Amino acid sequence: MAEQQETDDFERWVAALQQALLERERELFSETVLQEARQPQNMGVMLDADMHALLLGPCGDNMEMFLRLQDSRIEAVAFMTDGCGPTVACGSMLTRMAQGKTLEEAAAIEAADLILALDGLPPEHVHCATLAVHTLQKAMEDGSTEDEETKE
Image (spheres, rainbow, N blue to C red):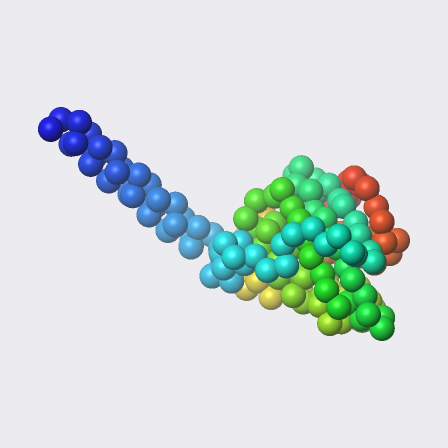
């Protein structure tokens, strides 16, 4: 009987902790950021990419972008990251913003555009958007890059 009570107490504590974490996330991040982080689009390795870049951000997160072109347009774009939720959200949203665009149109996307599309980011996570945009730009510049560090 005492073991069951301890189990019930522990489960209530875990549920309360999870609820507190969810509430804190909602205070810090827009619903769009949370959605993109929880259910990212275009996340994965693209084996037949025409262009590729891998950058290391100032916080230690890696971002990798893969682009496949058709008639000078981005037919498909994918990303990988080992970063935090906001970095995942930035990669996901940016791939959707770039898909279907010409290289010139995609190169014109700035971190501010990405942040706007995400309905904002806290100041301490703006570097996540910058990393995503720099990785996309680097992939389009020279097609293949390994382990460069962004200067932000």
